[in-house]
Length: 292
Image (cartoon, rainbow, N blue to C red; front, side, top):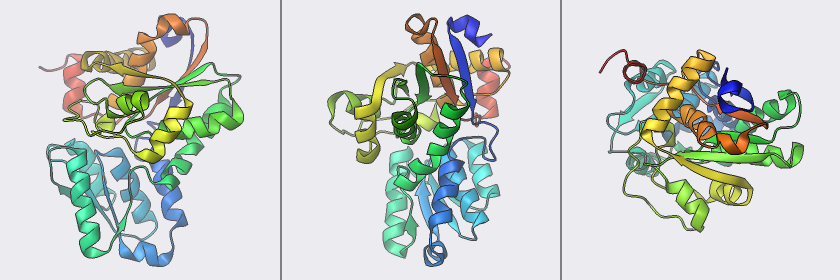
């Protein structure tokens, strides 16, 4: 059904069925598996809007380490509950991800804990397992892969693996128009802190780009598309209607970009990364028309 709507052969990479319902757990498991006993004993600290935090929380618990996760005030309460259930201490502070990140860095400096930046290279390498599975299981060459971009770990891993396995495949990133920091830095090469990142797609809500992932994106992205809040919500509805699967904002943005680019994708083989399903139930009800 999705292929018919888009006019192309749509191949979906579902990451919503992993233990944290999102792709980030791949990076967390890879990171924790490589830490020394001494590093784990220090305890881990990071900042998140939810999926990265769930990854670090679960991976830390599995490896006997403690974790403290900073989130902004008003963060998705269901993601906060999940992080606590996976064993993390969750601290709500700041108006957005970037302010929560600053508080996490202050705690690390004060207490000597192990800080896990959201673009830590070992996280990118762990997420590479997603890209490896996609290219190996796609059933033939892919013309394009579309994925959401928050800080760029997913798109970076796709580019790295694409370069080795399928050089002709275009990687297309998508950001929320209300959180365009990486899109703007990708175009200009200059990293600037934006005033806000006020989007329902919390996985895309960063006010800045990060040098290590930006360098990969600038050399490897074919395009970076901006989508509006209404287009992201349409993406949630399209995913539900055509795949009967919940798409959180970052995943829905990829569906929205595919729809926006459909004329240029016609007749091609296109992979869409359904990166997660952690959409707050109230938002899902509102978007699908169950409540106002």
